[in-house]
Image (cartoon, rainbow, N blue to C red; front, side, top):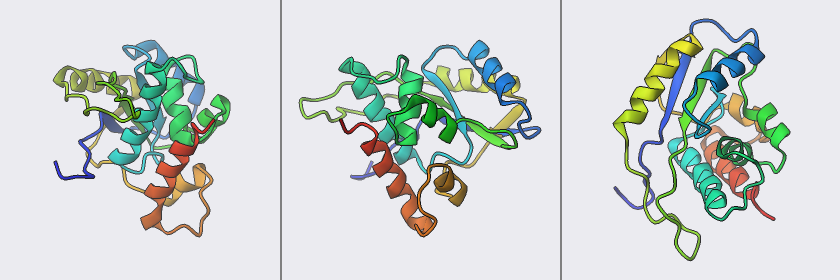
Length: 186
């Protein structure tokens, strides 16, 4: 892997068979069927890249290791960081699935492999084939099918995160990563 490159993040896009018409039912089904709170469900337009997801994961799992999470669970902490806010409710409002959404992301949050004395990740977690099977098993509960594309920066995701519309598409990923980093400034 080249410097600055990141591996594939354990996130699977799911194209829903029908747009969401009742978010409460979808989220309730998700919570009932997911294997643990290391699994999160986020709105389709939100992640801008694997780098964006890894950056948010790193902050969330570092907080978990240091016992300094703002949220009570790792999935909520990840969602808070990804949304770029200290407020849990605002985070879910920004990046949770909404009525009318046609796709979502299933995200698995691996345990950290270790944080060095500078707060940096020692290495990325290894890919686990069993996790892929779990993700595949969750898709039917969401009435959806695997989306083959990886996350990319998009205007809808930027709008949901309140990134100014003057930001060019090419700058959205950087803006989203900066928001994630600023969510943990204390």
